Image 1 (tube, rainbow, N blue to C red):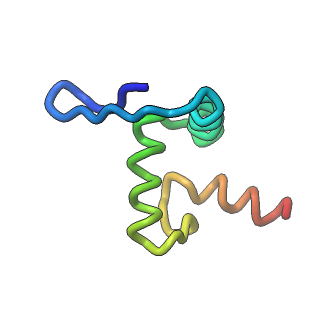
Image 2 (image 1 turned 90 degrees about the horizontal axis):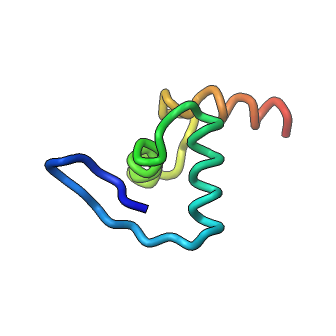
Length: 67
């Protein structure tokens, strides 16, 4: 899976399972897989607090309500 744009590209090698999982989560959040990986870095930078990342707040709230 290639993630990036014309100016800056990162090659990320993933297993078939990881690839399908990334596509699933990105689709659920309504974002691209590239954006999912960027947001993941943001989560790590914010001590793994997805509730503080605007793009993930809806999914986070759904998980809290169902859990």
